[in-house]
Image 1: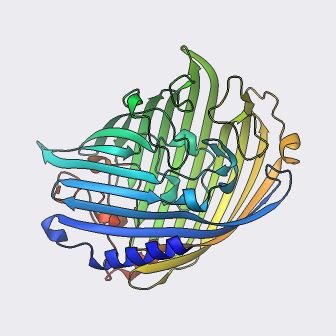
Image 2 (image 1 turned 180 degrees about the vertical axis):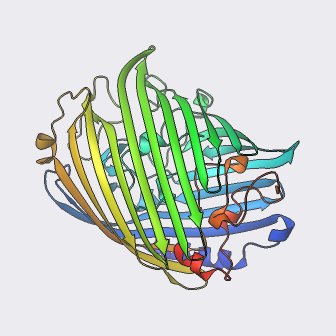
Image 3 (image 1 turned 135 degrees about the vertical axis):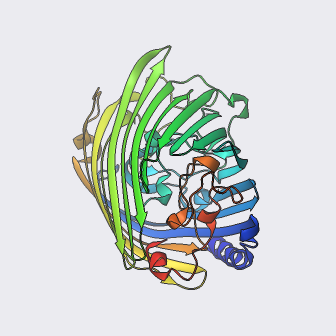
Length: 437
C-alpha cells in the first residue's frame, strides 16, 4: 500500500501539470488507477469456499503526443499485489487456473506516428502491447472480474508492430509479433521470435456508436517460450455499441471466438467462446450484465490447485471443460475531487462447469465438489486523472475518442488517436462525468 500511496501522489502532481497546448496538437497526460476488492468464491479449486482481498489493477498510464507522433505506456504493478493471482473461478492462463494471473509490469509501451492523405488516415505503432485481434482488454469494460475467454479473445503483452488504415467507415489493421506469452510479470518477450506470428482485423463503422469487426491470428507456440509447443489459429467476430448523452451511457458487446491448437497442420483441440455483455448508466449509477459460454483446456495441476506447470509438459491436456457464467454488476455514483474519483461496486457471478469436447478425465464434481459455483466481489474503483477509455487499438484503428467528443478520422490528425482518451473531460459536462470512470 505504501507503493500505491507514492504512485498516487506522483500521479496527482503530474495530472495537475499535464495536458498543455492541446489546441496546438501537443501535450502529455498521466493517470493512475487501482481496485481494492474482496472476493468470496464458493466451490473453487480447493473444493471449499475462499474469501480473499487484494489490490487489483494497480496501474499507471501515460500518453505524450506532438502533432502526428505519440507514445503511450502502462505500468502494471499486479506482480507486487497479486503474486498468488486473483480469485476468478473458471479463468485460466499463463500457469494460473481459477485465478487471474498478474499481468506484465510493462503492460503496454507503444510509439507511433499518424497522418492523413488522399482521404485516408494511416498510422504505424510499435513496442510492447496488443496485437490487432478480438475485443478490448477487459480492464476497460464494466466488470471487475475478467471473462473466462480472456486468452481466447485478446492477444496482448507482445512485442508488436501494427499498421492501420482508415478510409470512411472502414478500418484495416495488420500486426506482426512474437508468439510467446509472458512467463511472469517481469519476463521480457523473446525478441528472437519477433515476427513469427501475425494477426489482422477489419472493422466496419456503419452507424454512430456501432462497430463490427472480424479478425484472425496465427500464433506460434504461445505456451512454449522457445517455439516447440502447439500453434494457435484464432478467429474472432465482434459487434460493439456505445452511446453517450448528457445524462446516460449505453454499452453493448457481443463476441464469438474460436481457437484451434494445432500440431504439424493437424488440429489437436478446438476451443470456442460466445459472450454478450451490456451496461447502462444514468445519474452515475451503472448496471451491467454479462453472459458467457467458453471452453477451457484442462491441464494437470501442481500441489497448489490454482497452478499448472509452465512450460507445459507433453500430454498435459486432460480434456476440455465448458463453462457457463452469468455476471451482474452495480456501481454507485463516483465520489470526486478535482483529480481523484472513487466508485464503489458490487459484482455477483454464477458459474457452472460441464465436460466439453473432448471431455477427457475432467469431472467438475471431483475437481470442485459441485457443478455450480458463485463469486461475490465488493470493492471500489479508484482513479487519478482519466484512464484509457479503449485499450487494444492504436492510431487510425481507434474509431472514436472518449465520450464521443471527437472522431479520429481524416478530419483531424493533429492529435493522435487516443490522446483525448487520456484527458479529463471538461467540467462543463458533469452529467457525462458521472457516467465516466
